[in-house]
Image (tube, rainbow, N blue to C red; front, top):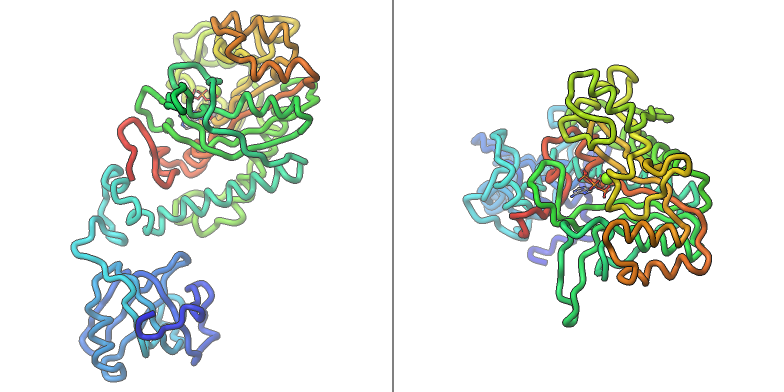
Length: 446
Ligand code: ATP
Ligand code: MG
């Protein structure tokens, strides 16, 4: 380490306070801003938790140190040792008077983009310089919220007896239809990136795991470029055995989502306020509307749509507004999806009383799909028939079907898009904001 600044004594900015007046401290981070006012200079030094102010009265600082600190380019990484002084005028109530510094990495100039400048930078430039963009406090805040969202989700699922698992992402067959499969060459054979852990989650029900969840990447070659689709997203998947119907699954969906939102609202007050979001607690149960009821609501609002038809993106948004007005909720279920609309979803159980309907549901947040799920078909003959009806071959799914031959309990589950959740919760304009290094049709680097 140059200049012998001992990193073992380094404190992050959040660990320092005015009550440490007079103490010798070591700080390290990025030079965010330097102001030279002649007789005195100020440096804002940033780390993950915030900034500390370094104050340099010219007369009291050794000239070599003064020069080095006041001329080092913005965004360089430095370590500083100095004395902490309480000062009501400094933003945090204290400042540090440096006595030694080490330049750990001097930033080149000009910077590819500013970190604290108030100018609007387009998303593409930001994503191309993502390491820099992520230094901005409002961008970092999104990932602090993401951490809390996942923490709250794990907390809920664990308390409900779900076991966290990981399933393969290199797979032999898709679960969501061929159009969005990424093919890859696997030792001379064709393989795919997993679109969803669906088939493995179900196998684990056959294995007797009873209640599981997984938080892992899912891959979809989405053909259209939208603000709510990624090629690589994080899927929070849940599967549970011995359900009586899809209602049992819906209770877990709403419990999980409500708990995660509450957890974020309590843990991330500073981040939410920085992002302009009011903390909110959403209390389940959330409204349940059948697909048919939703279509009728849309017809009533002037939308051209027939019962049994898919609700398009515009319709979903309209529905979000209607449900908010009539039921006072941003969150709601669309239940009893028509079988025809879940065609690719060969594993969906159909309703005994009306096989043209499934017990499948979508769970919506402000008119955007957050979750899909429902009870699965666990009876082998019916499952095989449904695979065939979808023009797929049961032979290709033998590795999956085998688990249904030797003891498969009734079960159900769902998949929730983690980035979708953040996208809606934080009302961000583009889902790409919610991923560190997003992947889409044109972007594969950084
Ligand atoms: P959509 O109709 O919005 O494209 P889907 O019905 O194809 O989604 P599902 O297979 O039901 O998606 O996946 C479960 C959840 O995963 C979705 O409700 C959504 O939250 C999320 N999800 C699906 N595809 C994507 C994607 N390409 N990017 C981000 N999240 C996604
Ligand atoms: Mg869906």
